[in-house]
Image 1 (cartoon, rainbow, N blue to C red):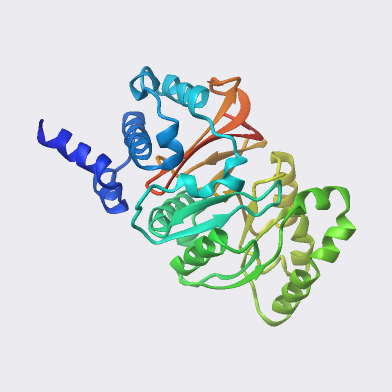
Image 2: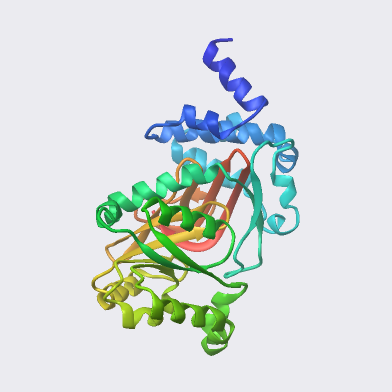
Length: 333
């Protein structure tokens, strides 16, 4: 057995640690690199993770063909029932996994809460992805070269609070985090907005208090809550918006209202964190943290062509978690 094959075998059988991932994938990745990482991750979980040990399949058949062929094969054969993440989340953590693991739950904004494990080390890979993307697409490194962000963030507790805190600190900033219970909030906002704002009363009061006593230049919130910031729009340099329910048309409207701010759409997900969005030609395109997260539109079980729409296919492949799901969200490739 040659040295590289032996190294790869040991990597798969005994551990799959972030230090090893970093050593092997510390460069720009092409499709071949992504498939190699996915293959290794699937093999590791099928040897070590209770759910995937029972769901074993012939990976030689799955990982056969082009990049699109392999992704289509994965979604045809290995999609999970999301309800398992409500009741059997422990079966998705590898046996004997060594890491700093926390179980995070989904916000419940758009559906029943689900739970997945997060290794703290993943944030060491998520943060550089976010910062590189925000710097290259939106120039935040240049914006905050001579002064720091003073941020106000709305949202659920958990991964979101951890991720956004580290991101603001990376620019030398300070932040107010105003956490709130978001269970079922999207439906209430759409059907009974008055009732929703009654539920959000503590968030509203604290937000108003902060804005009265400090000058905030960066906010992360939902587009339904932007009216609170209208009196302070001259101070705002960056507005980060959660992706759910935001269309390109709505984003254009927000850009014209907050003309001095950089409007940044982000798609947040409890299993992988945030994906950075780019408003282009009246639509929003999201770019996830590859190879840990693959997001691609599907028609039936297959990957759609470029320019076509489909349901959001999601692969989250990390040492501590492997899930393959299809979400109801419609996206364009």
